[in-house]
Image 1: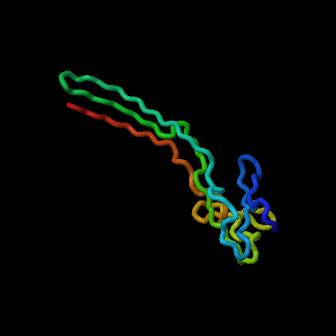
Image 2: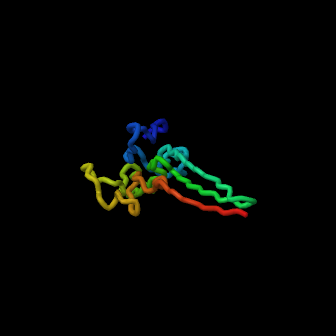
Image 3: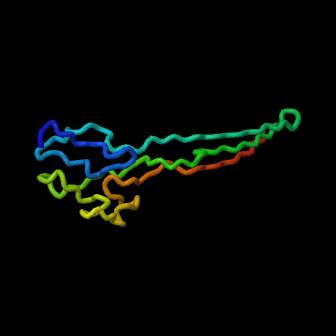
Length: 138
């Protein structure tokens, strides 16, 4: 492999291609690639709150408040299994913990978040949460 070979390539817009990665060259110090190649998808969250203040007379107030976090219930990937296992330092191309076999069939035990194969999504953005609050001040 020449020194100018690109080690990471984009394989589609929304897919992660684990076979696009290779291990470091033999006798390498591991500086071939930069940081943050395995990051989650862009995520955003819309948080909403609505409150109603009710005056009860004098200095007494009652506040009713409802808050909703991640209102549209978006489920973005925030983490991937980033440990790549190679059979030996002399073979930087063969990844042994891929989520699929040589024929391209999915290995069921390697697509679960607890035992995810290299490149599999293993953490997601939190689901929608709603909380209510009643506050009485005097």
